Image 1 (cartoon, helix red, strand yellow):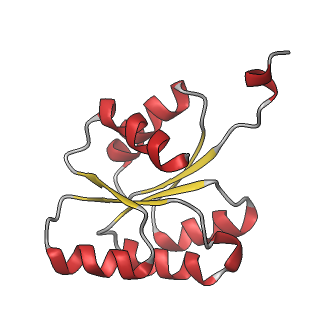
Image 2 (image 1 turned 90 degrees about the vertical axis):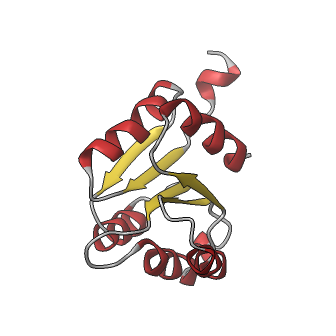
Length: 128
């Protein structure tokens, strides 16, 4: 067994109400060896995080119920998630939204429309 094979897979949780977006994000990560799980909203994500904490979270900003910023605030309340990389997925370029994201604890941004070739580069950069 090589060192690469013995290394545990990094877990990434993708949270988006769009199945298409989740699929676009998950495909390159899965191919690169990440263990990907998905949630359709913030409440489901919090449940999954409490059951099996991921190494990284990618969340949409605008979702029904709990939005991405509120999800990040909830995740950051648990000290075990204090340093977990969290990427925000959004098509908005509003500085107030970015400020709210930074204050909530976002680690970085993925711009919509999502380009699959950029996903892996951003995730690898933040996961270091």
